Figure: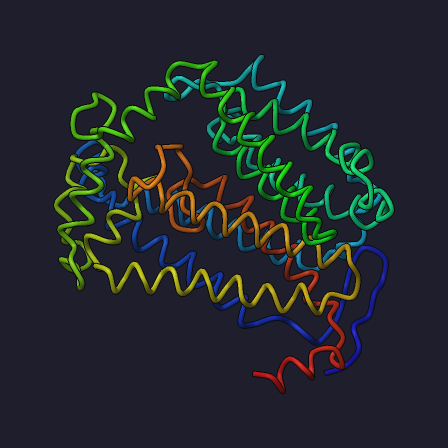
Length: 378
């Protein structure tokens, strides 16, 4: 391997983190398989074509992979000078949702450009990652004081509050991303405790302000009797009927109209039903392997900015996987969070693959000498 060359916005080097790339490809492919399995019955019933959902997801997956490779060739340092601009642009985009946004399931989260719709809050995750990685690097001195820390959280806080009005679950994930990057930059336990308390108070306040969120707590506590607990109960039936080894791929009963939109937030329940505990555990292991691999990239990054970017992506993937699986198993109230790479949703997959591209850009700049120790340990 030769030393990485840096020319303008483009990074060129012989090193590439193929283990991470393989895991990303595996998750995308597994997601396509499970989307077809979980949606084929409903797609055939509603559209006369059992491949309706998986074909749409496949198109977005191919587009996302192309964009991922494009972003992997851009030097991540180029984003530093634009992070504040990204935040202001993101605020404008989120406010635009209230003007031209389309409501789904009672919440206005979507903007449509012709036939293609997307949630601006999905972009906010990457914006917060880049912004927090930059300020934690450029303003390291502010991390030592509480006023400096509060100042650092002002703009991410504005983004999170705007998102929370219509999408509390995504706001929680964004807060977790910001908090994780900040804590890695300066592991002050007393500040972390204060951050968690303030976040909990904020979440409680948002729940009390909007009644439908309180209904979700009732459905969580008593899913068998609550009017809102139907989806949760059907998901639990699917998990229980899967047993250790599952019914077999494509053999789910609950996907046949019992679980509403089984290919979306509740797809993990179909995985449990068809592939059993073994399949579900295998998927969790793959996610852990991806996070473990990203940890090596973060440690080998040539600067703190790159390291914090990867930490933010780790926080995003880990938090979203954990929240989704806890919702499906009714450990926490239903929040409407998708399972990364797996759930149906084309634009969310594209934005996630963009994040993967930025991580791969960091990995391209790892010097071979810095990687030798890692390979010796493995």
